Length: 449
Image (tube, rainbow, N blue to C red; front, side, top):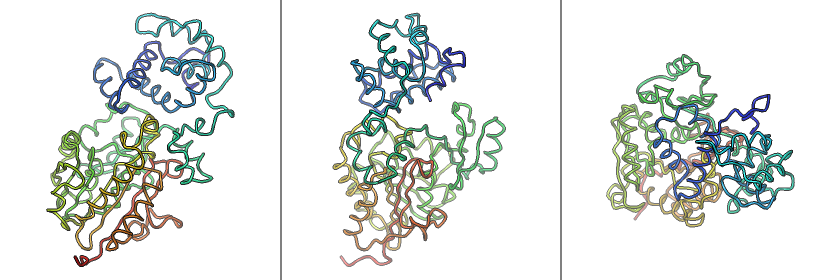
């Protein structure tokens, strides 16, 4: 909890400079129209002399503040103050156990330190003494940090487990790696990580996955620079596993994005066959191409699409064994990794209804690429039934030549007794990001035109 920023004798572990840097980042994020990860990456790149310890502390403080945003704003408003980054930071420190005197020694106006506390700010700190971050008087959606647009859909999805799942989304995510079998083995990478003094263990289900049980600077991982491993949540690895691509096959990753699943698919194929990574963003494809090169993969081609109905799709109709649609979605399953995302309009401003319509169009268009007897894999990092089971049901009703390939047949090691149709992962149940995936099999013969 927040008390980790104090020593047993009540002195702060953090520094005034780290607090000011965190405040600078919070204010930059509040003013920017970009996702937090983009703002943070640019901010750190502009400060190459910042040490790893400072970077780690600033990053952890920032994400803690983002994970507690609704509750901090509630406390600030409860005591009649404006919801500003500085007031939220002060509330966070006070609710974490800091006294006005301790906080005042850090907010001292010195070089690189936050400005001296005003009388009004000191009064806020006094009012917050003895309180904790959560209060029984808070509305449930505030206590659970759930945005209004997602409250009812998530409550319907989880029922009695709603509070448990929302609480899991407020925990820091683990650091998962996927070993690149083209360059190394899981045993060799585990040995190297242990040699670096890191607590690492095999992932529970992903065959090439490794979980590191501590926070660290990624600069300390030489195998990341060499392409022996990639950072990839275990849930994402399992979605790629469901593609079940074989050496020599033709595969499309229709919404490839940064290329993490594309790399896992190419590794399944042992660098044999043909993988096409499609996306509507030229920048994302260029960045992914560098990842492919570093990983030693040479069976991937990138393809820039103008939209989900690009002419390229029609020209390659029924030409692929496997087609993965990792659809743009609300991202509710990634909230513990991207805590700012819950406060943005889903789909980069599209809204949930428009996002669902886009998902349906993408899925229908990508389905044209699947050859008779081939498979279409639909996946999201969403926890909402509207984007998952309901989307698949609507697609099947409109495309009767596709049938569900039950999880118990495609990947029995991932199918529980009561969930054999689709892959459904949640932070509370699986300690992964929230993921959904359905494998849809096309009938061996094309339907009559």
